[in-house]
Image 1 (cartoon, rainbow, N blue to C red):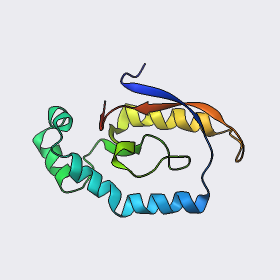
Image 2: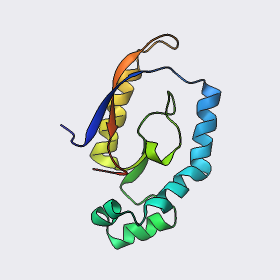
Image 3: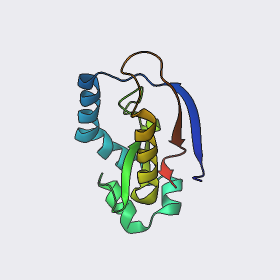
Image 4: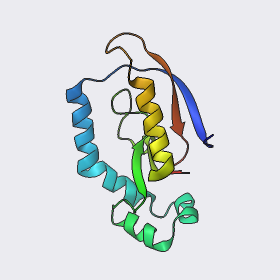
Length: 127
């Protein structure tokens, strides 16, 4: 069981492909880099990452073995605000979240109400 995870009950409504792609483009073209630079000296990050990985973050680059993950997905109500982003270990945590989230969404209808329980990692770095 993963710790430090909120499970939120939400109505999952798929965003249009065009809107999702625009948000993804914004993320890829600057938001990710700004987020990484912003968290490089955060006390939680300093406690968990070594000096080399923090220097990588300060350049706006993802350290080896990590991903930047949207807590609430861009496919639904998620956005690119820093409070919706988390630096997450690729294995096993990111893989566990994405596999679970794909399982939750695979049979959802494109319109209408889709009430789901959504796992959302806490904090800015996970675990």
